[in-house]
Length: 324
Image 1 (tube, rainbow, N blue to C red):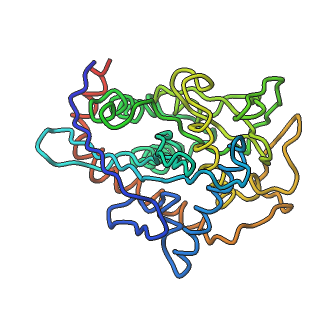
Image 2: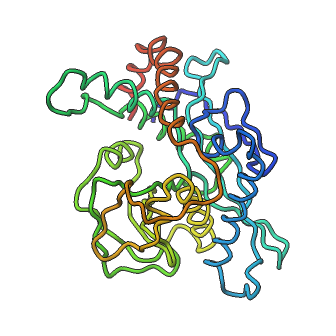
């Protein structure tokens, strides 16, 4: 496998004293929470929600519901494509760890969870709109997502990844509001009831190019299914506690960012279509600027174009063409 690029992994604790560094992708969910007047309350409340949800799902041998604490690390990945020591920030993901207060042991959780990337911002906020400008019918550019997918696969196959993480990533996203999901008879003790979508989406195809397949599950006491993107066998490759760490973390984020779906007062039925205009939902006490986030995606897409895609276009095209 052609894997000439060098990836550097940096990690920072996501706790109530977390402050985004100047080069953090500020569209990232956790960075958005960690700014403004209520930053510390935001972080404290979000972490409390995660821990409460974790202990509710991991209820065995946990009578008081306080056995576990989830610890989060923000993992930032830089890539050096020329081998000259100059790197560009590519990917940001979250790593969960679980602290068991009964055994006083720290258990490794799952890496992935939240996913953000400058090149994805470029693809969706610069390349796709430019391609469709002035067109009557929406279409997708040729090779859309190829470079991003190969960069991600190259990272997961890299020594840096293997030295840092013992299992492949699982990324957990919200369901799409332009699809309908049908409940199946399949049920998992932790992930809950499985749903199947009526069609495939651009996001699914994009993640497919990253080597990830998707399944949709609605855990117990959730309002809506979550999309789990993974490599291999989601149900058998990860322990119950690992899966719970992802559910509790990402469902909490979704309740904050997509309350119309994940904090809805009515639970998804047999046939479910998510609705971002649903007024029958509750709000968390956590302040989040959704509008700012979509503006920043565009800004950061342009940043990627200017500092990564355009200056290295020929090299990136060559590398992608040769990447097996």
